[in-house]
Length: 164
Image 1 (cartoon, one colour):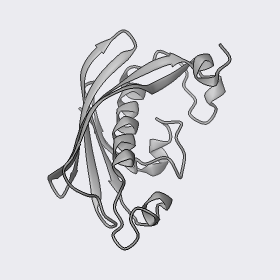
Image 2 (image 1 turned 90 degrees about the vertical axis):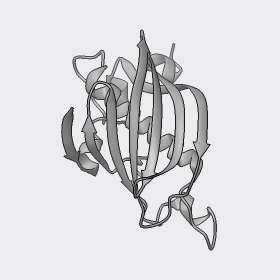
Image 3 (image 1 turned 60 degrees about the horizontal axis):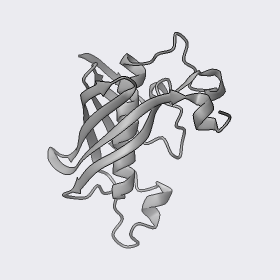
C-alpha cells in the first residue's frame, strides 16, 4: 500500500472535482484494492449552513459523494486507461474516470459535525471490464457513521460531455 499524506492541492491531481464540490482534503493511503482519505468538516461548507440550522451536520448525500470521490482516487491511481491524464482540462482526456453508475445501498449510523474528521475507507470488491464495484465506510473517532456500496465506471469523455 502506498502511504501518501497528500493534502488538498495534491488531491486535485487525481480528481476533476474542484471547490466547493471537492470533498476529499487528504489522501492517507492508496493501493490497488483500498483507499483511505480524510475530510475535516469545517462548518463553513454551504450545504452544512442549511442542514440543519441550529444542529449542523454533514449531509448523508455528501458522505456518499465523499466515498465516490475517494474511490475515484483509487481508479485514477491504478486503473487509468490513459497514458496522459489532465485534471485541469477534462476535454483533454479520452475517458472520464469513476462515473457513478449504480448505488447499491447506504446505511447511516451517526453524524459528522463541524470539527469532526471523517476518515473514509473504500474497498474495491470487484472489477469487470471498466465497471468497479466498491464498498465504503466513513468513521469519526473510530466510530462508523456510514456504510455504502456503489459502482463506478470509466466511460468515454465524449459520452459524458454529450457529444457522442
